[in-house]
Length: 265
Image (cartoon, rainbow, N blue to C red; front, side, top):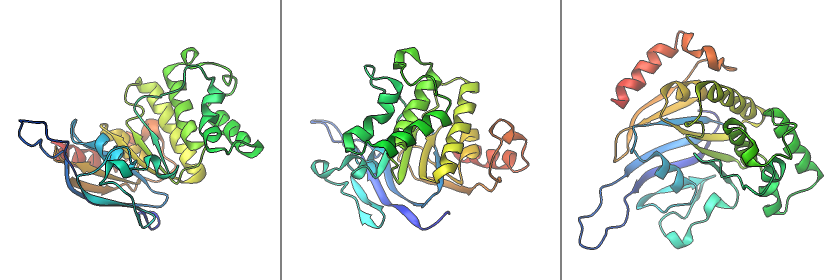
């Protein structure tokens, strides 16, 4: 694991509220524990319905937990009381969801700058950083385009750098490339790794794709079906920088793929 734990998930559990006259709902996640090192790129893979999105929502302080704890930089985050939740932990945790959620009335540049405006941090330096990120993902020339004028891949790039621009220490990503075609997805994976290498942010990336989990991660966790627990943990030692498009030919890829696949089944 890279560095000391920045995030510590201990005995985390979740089940949704009981409806009147019905049996208690099943546990979605139960007694789930793991840590994430500073600067680590952790991928998490699990069957559909295994609580991956629910897990990220609890870490991001969007949803409360039924038990356990989340520590960020050794401080316990308030997750038990819905009224005490602090979404994003005061901009310390960024969240890239499955939808791009771009504001349709704002241009690409103004969408990317939006978090800086909200935080009161928009100045010449942060604006220049935003322009650098726009160039880094190939959106130069599209700064004045509105979301409906962009392709799906371009919208995803804008969504990604909108989170990176305000520089949160931790970034959560919930299957951000899942709905894209294979070619666009591979390009965005390359973009993400290049951007991650610039600042080595701590990333927790949820996916249902084994190849993606291996190609991106320093380490991958495999979840069981609900209630989610850890079925396997694998350190990925394929050297960086990685050839996303040719990674399946690497000698370590096939055996690791088969081990993860067996755990998922």
